[in-house]
Image (cartoon, rainbow, N blue to C red; front, side):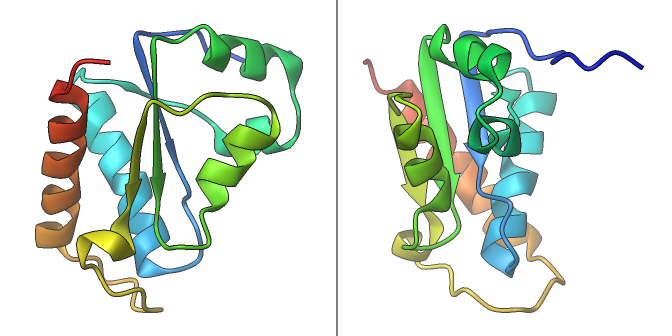
Amino acid sequence: MAKECLCQANEIVVFPCSGGSNCGQIANNVAVHLTEEGIGTLFCLAGIGAHIPGMIESAKSAKRIVAIDGCSVECAKKTLEHVGITITDYIDMTKEGIAKTKNFKLSQQDILFIVKRAKQELAKER
């Protein structure tokens, strides 16, 4: 199996934190929803954190970078900034009123709320 990234730049790339809480997993679900709807493309935050050159360059060539963090620790934001990727659209779910827990029975209502917020962010001109 080839050791190469299959990521290709898109107009909009989405980086969810995908952390170990309900909020991290909601962020991942939101990125999947946006990708399935053709609004953006889910990108691999772990590849960015691992400093994989092709992934970083692909991300940097996107027109919009969406970072979705589950909480105020800002792992997605900090990972992207660490390699010089400029975030154009940002959501911190705890600032949107979603409480961070270890309950992994995710609320569809919370997922759809953050999908809506992401769409609102993306509707803004940059």
